[in-house]
Length: 173
Image 1 (cartoon, rainbow, N blue to C red):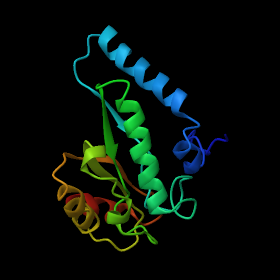
Image 2: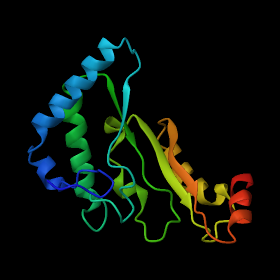
Image 3: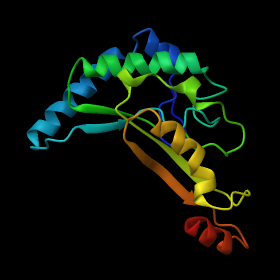
């Protein structure tokens, strides 16, 4: 297995579906559950698995995988890890629409039985979205419709020459 530049494992989804990583997933889940117990932490651990899957920049996203492969991989990982502990919660976190070429979110949805929390990541690059609401609202509506809690995973505004007013207006919007 290789590594994506950000420290993200770049293992093909097929290897997860074959069960190649099941021992590692089981071991990690057991250790996480024991660690929470040892530290006296009653809250579950939130796992943001393969975020921004509907973008084009991660090894688990287009063009590296198809939505059906992603959702099957997600379901497999969640099933394996939940079999070891009830202390994990899984956070499905696409990127907000408006970042160029993105596929529809519904294709990437693994299902209510496999997702505990939803949310999204969103960055403004000064590309014409007049406000945070203009960028976030369509994605928020989609993830909120699942009935699961919604969290913003990552957000920010690009620093570009002449972009200071845009950044200020975006947050006020």
